Amino acid sequence: MKKHLPLIVRLLISALFLLSAVAKSFPIWAFEKQLVDLGIVNWCQAPYLARLIIAFETAIAIAILQKNYLKSIVIPATLVLLVAFCFHLGLQMYQHGAMNGNCGCFGQLIPMTPLEAFFKNIITILMLVYLYKNVSDKPKGENKFVYLLFIYTASALLMFFLFPFCPCKAEPAVVNTPAVMPYTPPVLKDTVIAPVGSNTQSMENDTSHAAIKNPGPSKDTVPPIIAPVKMQSKFSAYTVFSGAKVDLNEGKKIVCLFVPGCDHCRNAAKEIVALKKSGKLPPVYVLFMNEEVYKIPEFFTEVKSSFPYFVIDDIPTFFKLLGNNATTPGVYYLWNGNIVKGYEGLEAHQFNAKEMMQAIMTNQLH
Image 1 (cartoon, one colour):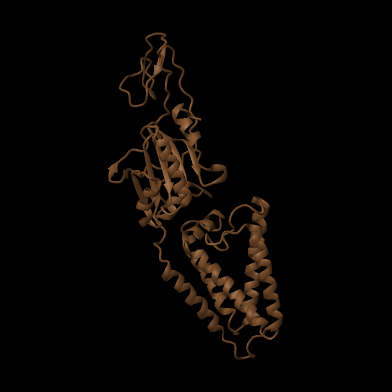
Image 2 (image 1 turned 120 degrees about the vertical axis):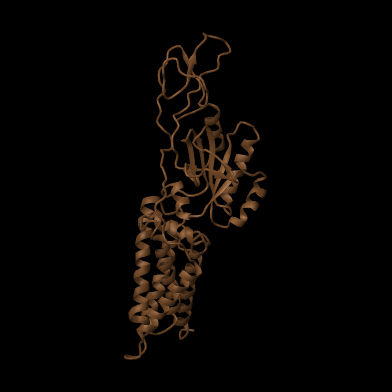
């Protein structure tokens, strides 16, 4: 057993790195987003770095099983990589907590907290230290560095072949509006404010809202509705949903950012469908990410309703609409292009159907 232990350890390390590489690849956009969220690269650079890192892990999985420069290059390089990962995990634990979030070591396939990943890396480092003491390179003069170069080059080419992508496009014209637009209504004496879209004109020459003379106090007088000034929202570029033209900056709208195969997105959509039954929900429009688009019919079948939708082909553009470090599902209540309520992902910023409906019904601006 002792004789074969180094080989068993090498096989375990190889399997670990191969699993890590495969897990990061499905879906690869999730790994790209993680690199962007960490501030390591931007969306233009992320596709390249993601594939090179996955290729490096694949190369380690192969190189650890051969003997060319095994002790002098392969094991030390792997140790340096793991120590760097441990340093990064330690920083994450300090900033966000040891048990919060998914470190991304095994992608979306096997979610791991930073603490779990840290211990996994420490165990792997100990195995590598054992290997360093119990293996050797090929005899002097027989080591071929070209073999290691070939392993990594082949792994990198394989990644770019299996996961092709279009080079980075120019930055999209996205207007980032705050979550809630600050708004102070004008003080108008003896006037009530008509809803946006009314043909009435202010008797006091108000340029931002239409106003009409108040005929006098009445028991049946409806409280004035003061609509926010029309703005160009960050969704302004999207004007066609399911073949029909739409102005998302006009009136009240609900805009959702969903991934067709995302369970959390489907749960949010079900809550929206439940609100829709009240008959008081504004029109709902969905922007789908271009990932597993064949699941869109299945998405609407599961939520038992359908909404006009548009598929955003460019994944970085989709996540830019969500904002830095945000993830799906994204649900936004817009009024004249102003984002009155916005929800992204889970936990603290998770979609709150009751809160959003209250804002809609009370014409709440903030």
